[in-house]
Length: 414
View 1 (spheres, rainbow, N blue to C red):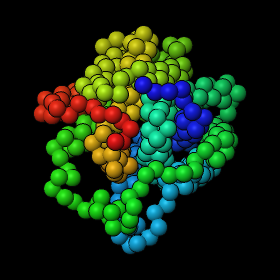
View 2 (cartoon, rainbow, N blue to C red; view 1 turned 60 degrees about the vertical axis):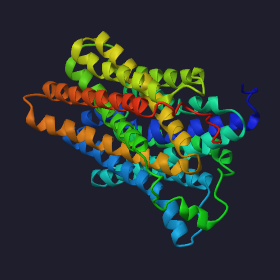
View 3 (spheres, rainbow, N blue to C red; view 1 turned 180 degrees about the vertical axis):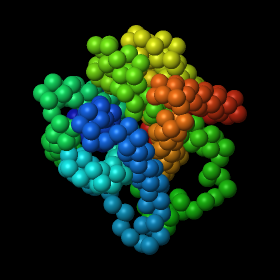
View 4 (tube, rainbow, N blue to C red; view 1 turned 135 degrees about the vertical axis):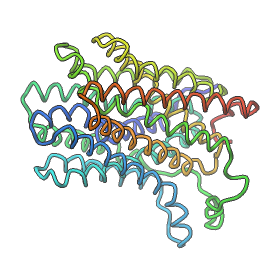
């Protein structure tokens, strides 16, 4: 039973949440409400927008892979391993500067900026997750982890509402990007001092190196299934999350709800993350993930089953609600299965997730090029995404069947 959260624990929650607001909510997802603005300004077309989305997720994949390999590389060459808090700070600074880069009138550089943003957000996500979960466990407050994962949802809500305000004030898309960079800079400044101290580290360089030397018992079938299933989640949601406003404009152009869909998506993400505080620490995360994948699958298909504003509304709620629950439960599974090297496993899961995110816009781009119209292309894309979530749900069910005795343990890393 957890005691009343300490000041240190609340400070960690604040820092982790703001880190996710900036890195995930702004740098990653502000692109979704800003894409219609960029299309309206004729600075990009839909194919170009798809390319920017894809290149961002390629960067995210590379960044996540680097998170996996960096400790081994540094220890192998006997170089000093930076503290996790230092990496988080550097990632957030880079992220703010790259958001600002999108405001510059140099469209040829935008793919570079989005690619580098993907790298910086991967580092911010992996190391913020590892640092926050570890330190909350240290301060006996692991159930507060879910609050941190409201960060992306809060960022989505803010990006949607701020975009609506900017549109009403007739901002250009470049001015909108600049505005987001200023807000992100102020947020980073507010948590700068929060990131200090570090997670547990092995006592020697040799021990650190041993963590990354393949051993027969290090990699298991359960880890393989977890990695693939978690990667599928990246593919399953990304088409909806990237093209939601565009799809809505295609399907229900006269709806007054269109501009509110994205903020509502963010609110549902926040609500889902907050409800994770009610999940018992000893609950089996694989069973929960099975149920959550099915919920998101239904959400992806809702706009196709009911092509109305209510169909979209219910759909985006069901897609958004599980979004960060999946992230939190996946990271907790990483800590359960590999408590001594959880950050490395978190990096691997994020890399798989990033791969899924790359495939999503690529599949949408393929259907856009080979369909009679945009509506048909998005229908094929959403059906494909929903099918993948069904496969991911099956994998978690399979894990529960194959490893029945691996009930979730205490998440304090012991």
